[in-house]
Length: 109
Image (cartoon, rainbow, N blue to C red; front, top):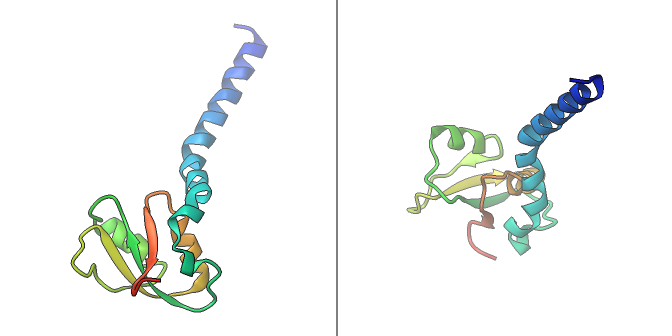
């Protein structure tokens, strides 16, 4: 194996690892605008939001979501999580999570 071939394999491996670890974050940022309710775009005050998922969240996901706001239950829908008093900057961050399907207001727009 030549030196150039070995170097190209190392570079390919590093790029692959970067894609594996950074890919979900990049996907979340790219799709954030579609996930956020229109009335939440540009909000400046704390909001009560409903985070919709495509699965029933487990303890790990609930714990992760509590970093963004106070847990408020599910309101009967097991695939939704209500977060209370979510600061405006956290509303945007929630929509950037790749495993979140939608972020809406609790009372609707």
